[in-house]
Each structure stands twice: as structure tokens, then as C-alpha cells.
Image (tube, rainbow, N blue to C red):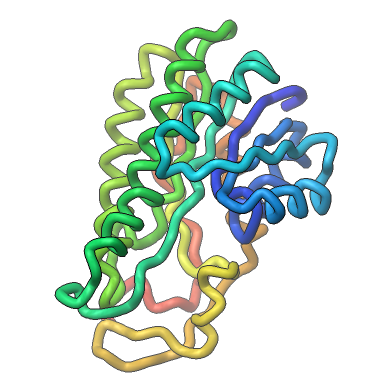
Length: 248
């Protein structure tokens, strides 16, 4: 795995930070990106300042994404792995009450940002020698099953599944492998409220178990370790006791 070059979006906190640490342990040089430069620098210092390289960018901004990947190409000369992890939740309100700006924010961060990053990764991976690379998208279990009052997040994560499949198909002839990891209740800043109660399908509020983000990180590291003639198209890693499988 030595000298592999990776980009992890949303890499400064939570699941993204755990993924970054796992990739560094496997020998990657990792460029982490997010909107808050100070958070990225803190993450790099905490993991390995020689192997983690912060670059502040908002993935919903097409020009910022172009600058990010131009930086990666200029500094390292290639790209072996992209982990599209950045994303945001929307307010838990009835869908008819959701402001348009919240919808647009979710689409920008969760869907458009992943698409923009895939575009730039494809451009580099198709042209480099050796050719090809791997892309792993964070789908979330919301890519298949919604929670109440989660239309923007659920819609964008369902769309990620279609984007993963389309990119996987389009990447085949260029030795680009594209897969998706669907995460259920990984402990992070985004899921910190789950212990206090989460609305269920029947309208009740119940606390839900979470799992250490390190479990997700190991799964991503496994996907990344495969040769490019093998691919995990979809993988679900979830808290075993969470109310996902079955009714209720």
C-alpha cells in the first residue's frame, strides 16, 4: 500500500477522520478536505502530520473542488483513491415546512459535491500511469431506508446509489473501480443526539445504539486494499441492535 495517494472529503472529523487514520496506517498519503481549515489541521496533527495533508474546500463549490484536485495532481502526480464522505443532515421537520435553502444545502453537500469530486478523480485516474484508481462513496443506510422527516438527506443518499452504479459502469474501461459503503449509526458529531432519542417510523422517540467509527474505517480500508480487478459495489456496516432490518 506504500505511496498510495488518497483524498478523503469531510476528513477532519468523525467517520472521515477515522477513515483517514486507517488509510494512513495502511501506507497512504491522505489529503483531507472540509470547510474548516483549523479542524483539518488539528486532525492532521492528531493522526500523522507527515502523511495527512489538509486542504480547505467546500465540495459543493465546483471551483473549489477543481482547485483541490489540481493541488493533489501538482503535489503528488497521481490519485489512487477518493473517499466521498462529506455530507450534512437537514432539520428534522415535516417536508412541507423545509426551507428551500435547506434542500439546496443538502443537495450541494451530499450529492453535487460527490459528483464534482468524481468528475475530477476520473480526469486524473484516466490519464495517469499506471491508469485507474478507486472511488468509495458514503451512501448511509438512508440510501435504502428513510427516517421520518428526512426527505433531503434520504433523497440525496438514494441518488448516491445511482451515482455509484453509473460511475462504476463508466469507470470500468479505465480501470476505475467505484463502490459504496452504507453506514448505520456510526458514533460521530452528526449522530451524537441518537443516545437521547430518535424519531421512529411509528412516531415514538427512542434512543438508538451506535458503533465506533473505527469499524467503518476498517471496512473502507479493506475496500481500498483490493486490486483494481476486484470491487465491493455495496457494503453495509451498522450497529447490530439498531432498528433497521424489519418492521418498526
